[in-house]
Image (cartoon, rainbow over all chains, first blue to last red; front, top):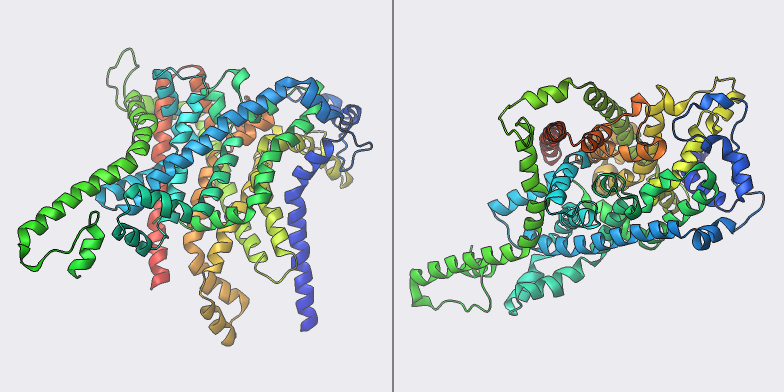
Amino acid sequence: MKKNRYLGRLVLTVIAALFAFGFLLPTVLTISNSFMTQSEISANYGKVFANVSGSDGKAYIADTVNLKFIPDKVTFHQYIAVLIRSPEYLLKFWNSVILVVPIVLLQLVIASITAYGFTRWRGKVRSFLFFFYVILMLMPTQVTLVPNYLVSDWIGILNTRWAIILPGTFAPFSVFLLTKSMRRIPASLIEAAKLDGSSEWQIFKDICLPQCRSALYSIAILVFIDYWNMVEQPIILLPDAEKQPLSVYLSTINSSEVGLAFAIATIYMVPSLLLFLHGEDYLVEGIAHQGSVKG
Amino acid sequence: MSMKTAEIKFGGRGKKPLAAGQGKVKRTWDRSNERIRDVMHSAAFLGPSVTGVAVFFIVPFLVVVYYSVIRSPLNPEFVFLDNFKAVLGNSSFRTAAGNTAMFSAIAVPLAVVLSLGLALLLECRIPCKSLFRTFFLSPMMVPVASVVLIWQVVFHYRGTLNVILANFNVEPIDWLNSKYCLLVIVVLFLWKNLGYNMILFMAALNNIPKELLEVADVEGASAAHKFFNIKLRYLSPTVLFVAILSIINSFKVFREIYLLVGKYPFDGLYMMQHFMNNTFENFDYQKMASAAVLMALVMVALIALLFKVEDIFGKDVEG
């Protein structure tokens, strides 16, 4: 009986380890490959990237790729090349930063004010409004991009960064999550402050915001990763290649620069991985509190 | 309810309790005053966001609806359903809608079942749980753009997977340009989304009353019995939530496809967003508007359906 139980645990651990291996593999390979020399990458993967875009791959059946974990020779050459010799990549990285950081900050500011409004006062109109925000949050980009495009066109911000930043600022995602976490603040706290003669703004600023600190952090991470990863919005709202973020540009890297591509890809995941390692527990808590769409 | 609690609930700033004889008039006057103050306060807090949402989403969406029922912006003749009929008859739209539906139909159930499986796995007594949690969750934080290179290497016609399969005498498959293409995207989708769903399930599993499971243990219930009759009942709202989330995320899978194979993929990977992009490029407002309206209707229907189901299951747990 006992032996059986041990065996069961072993099997479960092996299954978990296999899944972990699968989940980590792409990330680890990208990072380890970024330390390869250009010639090694060409030798290993040249056949794949020689004709990424559509042309018939069946012409070279003889050659296959050679996926490797550990480089023959570890080198930082690719990084040096990206950081010093090819400023266009850093420029794209910067494009990502100046799109995503304002969205995260503005969306959180607007959302926390709004969430307070939804928490403090209830009523038919407001619960309908909240319900409406939930529906809007659930709409896929295929639906929301069309209105965004039209407005940007009307007010003349199409093809500028604002065409992405402004709709991002008012996206209802963090309103929903923040309202959920503000509603968990004990009502007695707010009532006590009220009796002390605090104004609504003071209650919001001094009581609700500090109570929601971990929720704010986890929502910031979620919003960040969502926009750091964006592709659809820039393609349509910001077609100017000069201004596009690295997330779009990475896919257009051509075969002569595959060596650099791994290094750039690694640099691009660094900010979000750092955020993740630092805030994993908050993030988990934040996701866990989502619970259900209602309420 | 006593006067006092009522006052606290609706009360304005620094309000003193009313003296006994002051009567009803003053009270109703105060109350309507407070109501006005409440409305003004809530308007002040909700105003910025509601304005922004109205400007960037609602008003233009109403225009989209308007565009979808007229001939063209230059010739605003009311044609009602003509545009919708045209879009529904359009072969690219059909391909896109079919592929998107097909993808969701495969990916969503897998996402729900596998992430629940992972959550249950981490509930078992295995070592290094928190490390496993970190590993399972990590893909969520990796931008897809960063890992598509590896994906291309693995699933290319001369890629790693075919090299491995060759050892088992399997003919090489052109993964991204054949009927298997959807499978590749499903794997990528699961890789990215399972961790997030797993966290939702882990939280829900945590909320199941422990006493219930203990009682079941005492009565000698089997693991399967406990799972189907206790856990799954408490999990049903989360199952639905994860399903909604996965459906929405499955509509976003264009991103992965775009990064993997570019603007003009193999037919089997032509998604709704590809169709929308084409209408944007051709400034075909009528097609674009009616496709967006159709999509919104489908979403609202799906959400309403899932809410309904959640209502039924929610009552089941309470009762």
